[in-house]
Image 1 (tube, rainbow, N blue to C red):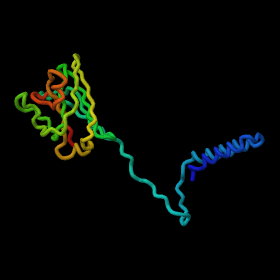
Image 2 (cartoon, rainbow, N blue to C red; image 1 turned 180 degrees about the vertical axis):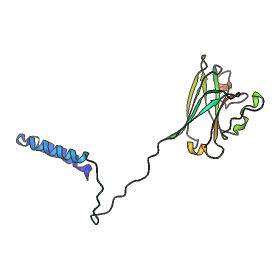
Image 3 (tube, rainbow, N blue to C red; image 1 turned 135 degrees about the vertical axis):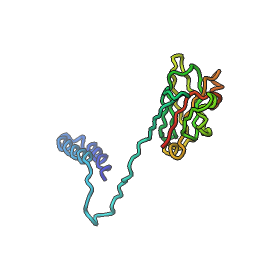
Image 4 (cartoon, one colour; image 1 turned 135 degrees about the horizontal axis):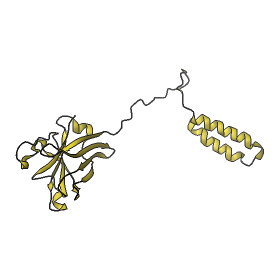
Length: 196
């Protein structure tokens, strides 16, 4: 009902615009309608006055954002990885510093464990199977790189954190961009574990 008052007031204004004598009254009427439209609604406690309107009591959920440290095989923090719920999928962002310049392959794995035990070629083998390859991160000459990818096939962040969690793994610098498009193979240079 309130939604129809403002258009009705506009029609009233248009119809009486040519009557100069009623200008002041029209302004008062328009101000009253506008004030009624802007006033907060108070729930009506009257019973039997018509069907009750159902109110939507569901909470509006904010998209989840989960950050975690990105560590090298020695356990040093070399950046941050983020998982974010977005409307069209899960966003994965990786920020690195102190890495070898070049394109580094990135992948999302099905176990959130970044155990670096063993030989460098076996570092982070605890991450399980590849869920999906991600776009490579380009690390500049100063050792800094950032990449963000929207993964529409990935479950929402909450689902990635339950059970075994998930991990983001970064491989060694590739010889070119085409080679970096594949999931990280060979030496794994960094890992970020996400668990619930």
